[in-house]
Amino acid sequence: MNKLPRVVWDQARLLHNAAFLDALCNKHEYSISWTPVTKVVCADPDIIQALLNKGYHALADSRIENLKSIKKISPNCQTTLLRLPGLHEIAEVIRYADVSLVSEIETIKKLQEMAQDVGVIHKIILMIELGDLREGILAEHLSDIGRLILAQSNIEWLGIGTNLTCYGGVIPTREIMMELLATKQQVEKELGHSLSIISGGNSSILPLLMERQIPEGVNQLRLGEALFFGKETAYGGKIPGMYDDIFTLQAEVIEVKEKNSIPRGPVGMNAFGEKPVFIDKGRHRRAIVALGEQDVPAADLSPLDPSIEIIGGSSDHLILDVSGSDTRVGDVLSFRLNYRSLLYAMTSKYVGKSRVAEELQVTS
Image (cartoon, rainbow, N blue to C red; front, side, top):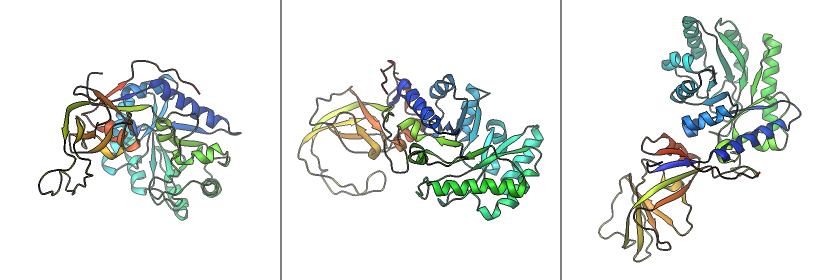
């Protein structure tokens, strides 16, 4: 844990959140499973191993590079590629993804071609557009695309799915889930094909899950933010009983000085082409932390010490008002992360990643 800055994460709290989601899904009268989505942690090997050790042997991610990491750790783990495959990467999709989400005929044909070449069966989930206007086919094209899928010798059509909230902000409702089930019935009636997976969406569907309003037949969810931040993404609410502080960002103080709060001289644009705005606080104690916008967006960080205020930053420096604290050079300060800042930090090669050494006592 010597590298700074670094993200530290609490394994006990992470596994508590996973168990909480298990229990939430198991409360339903019918079976609903959920797949951990690891993209926000970039399939960090230690986190992947912790999930595998607890029996989660099906994981999903948006990036082929992350699926490679998962397969390196556990070749038998069932991997799902969440972002629609690009035609240029089909060979790697076949190699590292057991399941992929699809919506294009050209992609399905290319998957078939490559799967046939290497002698494997590739599984797919056909995405259905239900209002959010991201990926998915329109229901009117279902029969034609379905017939094409069923004609492929090396493609196994597992099911259908939808994605809501991520782009258009559309909140999942029981009525929308009924539309998804109607699509399933259309496949069975017109094509005579039984679908085993009806994937209802992501962490935005959790309010519906907690109210037990997901209709019978929707049997799979893809959950990332709920797992790692203990929140649903329809309204942004914390889920009671889950932890939202699994991850902390730590960085070192490299300067502490008393300075003016307003620059001296003509002010133009900063390093990012923006004209900064300053609040006149007079002379005050300011600290510089070895952390910058190249690592995480400063606006998405919150100091754990309430007496410290983030003033701003540049590519490599975070500027703090530490007038109310005894912050000194060499101190390591801690910050709360949100989803975006964790994604940036986990992606950055300049930020270390470590599990906290001590196991915290977890209470439900």
